Image (cartoon, rainbow, N blue to C red; front, side, top):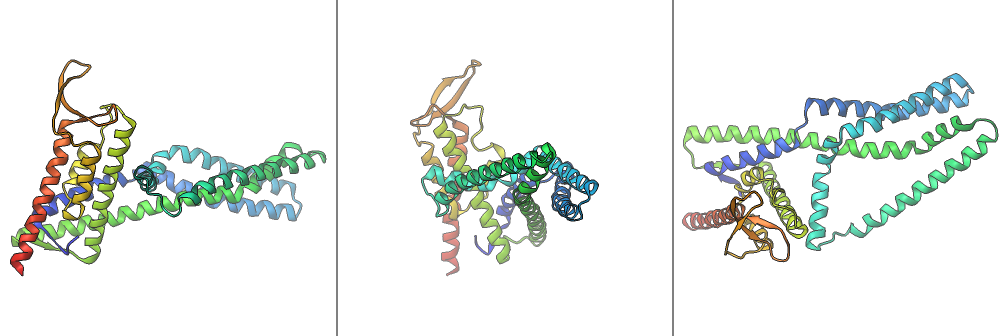
Length: 331
């Protein structure tokens, strides 16, 4: 991303930032659930410490209260996390996107095999913990403690794993909140620069190093997400009702591409099949629609979307030619 950008091009960048901000935005309801989730995470180890202290001083009532509080905190976690699944899915979106891109393009990262192996390790650890809990319960049940001992020991042994998993979830949610703040600052800064440039009738708007890097990363994310969805849907042969690029959102964002991402856009078109001959097809409802069939699949790509991709590529090529001409003129 260059250190300056055209004022007209800044409109597209602002739309891209706005779309990304809308996708990462947290509603008031999600913020409340997120806060309750944080309280529950802190309540679990607190109740565990109280349970240990109660066992040391051999106070049955205090132990019952502590174990009951810990049980309530863990149950609240299991109730809050499903209620907050939309936030959970959005937090993991970028991680899943990068993983799917590696799988679709056949480019495994260095951590790929280790990740697959670690899943089996987690299963083995879970089975070991379960067996340990059953053994403890069997021994304690002989002493008359029964199900109370089973529940209390089960919760205490699983406590580190539960806190670890929820803390990872909260760290990703916090990263999303930081992303929102970053996008807010970027949007405010670009809007201010745009207003100043329009008042002064300047053709170019200077960018700081941080702003240039942030916009470059944003464009790269957009192109990668578009590429992943295009390839995965073309290979899976999903129906036309599933919009490949989530229509207007991606169209607004892809309008902001420059010569640096031109080849990525061209590769998307190539992956979807570049047969220029549209065919007339009749849909189930009887209406006519131009479409292109993706080679090797039953998927059909709308001719309108195909034209949008070609138009974006042409705009990127023209932008590249214009910048070369400006650089030559400056020299």
